[in-house]
Image 1 (cartoon, rainbow over the protein chains, first blue to last red):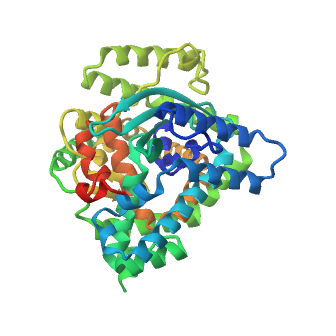
Image 2: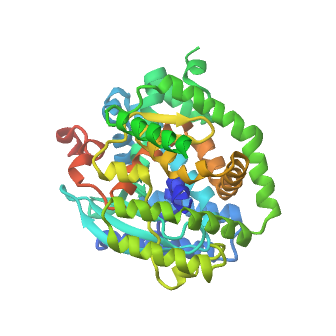
Image 3: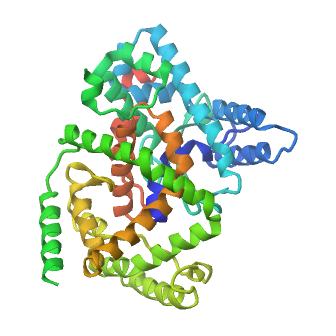
Length: 207
Length: 239
């Protein structure tokens, strides 16, 4: 059952990635980036002077620092990215960034008792680096969370979070492709603006 | 006895059928079943689980989960053997012995404190290990996401239930389901709200997570991910 639980904790992905307050750019390797990020989040969570809204905003800022939203936005739309006008690209990037950061901010309180342990680092074929971590303690104990980082202007930034094999990038890509196939770029952007719950069957949506 | 054997055979046949390809050819039907499951969940299961969560302290819920994990261990053990994993099989025998006795019928998990690892196996994973692909995605009524392979696997995982009186077996499953659902209240609420298409969210997460578990939580070769991480390479080089 605990394993079944893990499968669904996918979206919890963001909760474990945590950015840092602005750090010196450049010199830090991928694992150091993840370590600092995790530590920074713990610091925010333990800061008794902050109320929960402030904490959430801090955490969102951390995500802003540590994710490469430009690259993520392009990859998550795949070939469809080129079909967007520059203005649409900008809007998509903005909406997606806020979706991810808010998701992360909302979740973080639930992961309070948990710690991030870095267990390994893997260099991918074309230069990306995956930092492998495990959650220790709490409900998500032993949860495997991998961060894929890519270097941009000398800084390592996160481009994907993979929780127990389920990739955040891949998951959003499937969802965006689905929405795109029904309503095109306009439908997708509208959808992101509204951000409604999608639990209706396809037939109902098509009608 | 004969009935159980027949169902077991049926499950195997279903699993064999699963050894085909394609991801979600039955999407229309699956979305219908998914829609039904969502209604049932929101009308009945989620409220009951919320009550359960309110009523029972977390420690009790953990013990209930431990109890069912322990009850499932013989199936894990069988699948260790089917996958030729003697070390894991030995660990699971030890874990079962410790938790059933010292752990008071599995309510507690002293085995983990003694450093006996918890192995995650079931028949679906065994079929995967044997080379059977997941086959079409399949949403089961009330039970949720599966693939054809895993649906067959689950029928076998539940085989011991076939020897129990129906009322007992149903009751046990309901308690397990409610207890599991109670642990996921927040998570599922947020997933529903943040996904653009919750059906796709669940399908993607389920399929990727299952293959990850078939591989015993070891990441695949990077080449398999080329398409996800690199697009239109030449133009992408200049940001």
